[in-house]
Image (cartoon, rainbow over all chains, first blue to last red; front, side, top):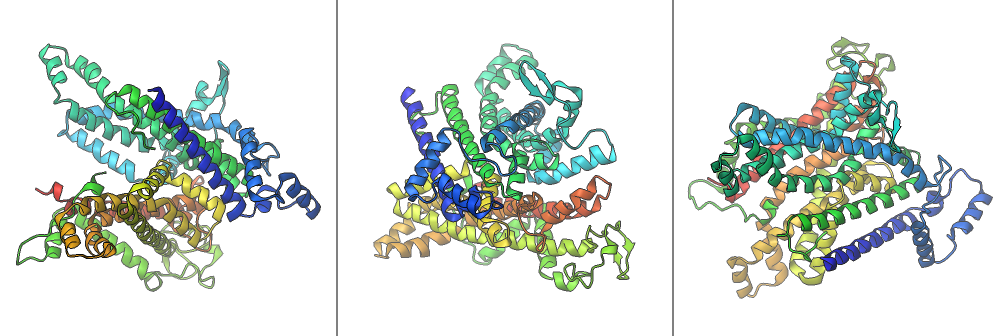
Length: 325
Length: 305
């Protein structure tokens, strides 16, 4: 076990190292670092001073070393727009994104599992067919268009829910979140639903497939033969066994949610990391882009590592050591 | 991945019917799929014929009047024709702009799909052919890339490369080649163990010849399936990027950009500017996906009754 974790850890560090090389060469070789790292509006004298300060007159391997050590210290450049450390600007917006993604995951579980269970237990029912057709539609709809439609229906036509911003936030146990106020909750509903739609479809399909498989297994038959109530068979014996794949996939998909929040945050003006990234791309705030890229790579590597390790703990049949990314 | 491992479509031994006819009749068994195929053809036809069928050339400034902007659907305009779907923020006839937009969306989707297929096939075949360390390295890169969401990768590339139709295609190809590479390698490895390959070896044919003339043609069925689905993905991804304002420039408005342009008017109740392009985008993606689904069923002999 320890050997497995260690090997995966070394692999992850290798991936981060390779990615740092790619990011570095993307910025310093493909693009022009002077343009990317120094405010292009600065005058000639300032630019020359900055070139010297950034060490751009040194050989390339030395520059890479400088970049790597800087990144390890958390120095990923200063944002042109905010005039602050790029990392700090991103980290400030992280809670809003995490909050949105967590709400979406919760929605996926709350809607997806019961609907998937129903569709799996009564595969021939009319309602089950509607659920499955709905999940196909949920897969093929482009996220941004669904967001627009949600705004059109619930904000413009019906006027029930607000469509922009995060609303009021409150601090509770040291966490500032809009989940703690009614106004904030009404603000998070639409964007979270938009983000969750794809995951709801996914959870429905996973749960349904798991249910259909498990229902013919001996332990379910045995539980029924013991005379347990239907509720207990489904709610305890069945659910416990189908939850493993659902939890794993949702864990893996969490990174995906953060990525897709780029779209949702732009539509609903949600002040998170994703919206910041789009603004940075549009205003050519390169240090923020670079910092975001490195953070996201780190996040993905960590998620993959954690899921791999958790999976081998949850399911002993997974052979340790055959770790592939 | 089931497509990757699936053996190639069984060549029918029937004398009367040709393989293509058999394939066609099997495909058309599903009414939904037949309808989707028809719809896809109509959309492609519209896109190809755009300059001849649209009531207005939306990018000819002489034909567009800013005073006609944001007219609701069905209004008659100064150009003396009816804007069946209304006009957009710049006074362009929305129906015409949508057909032109569809054209750009399809060009980007198909082009990037084709190039990604060529690149992915070449890489996948190389991996299957060389084996050993090179194969391991290639497949590790493929795995690594597929573990990142496509949209993020595309956003990053656009951030470095900049805007433009060529850059979008580069970004989409970079995002998608891995799917093709994985599929081709999987299929090629299965094929390489079959008797006909052994027979070809015994005949003393060279490895490249076996690879390209014997194995590759047998990998085409799963490739077609992946290509259909990935083209739909590419169109959706391009629309998303354009919607976010980091895709195509305003001079080449695809469906995504039209939707994005209409977004600012949506809150004031002028729904049609982004609603109708969105509908066309949706219909296009769903139609291509349905065609892909049916192709997968027909081309996969495991699912045969």
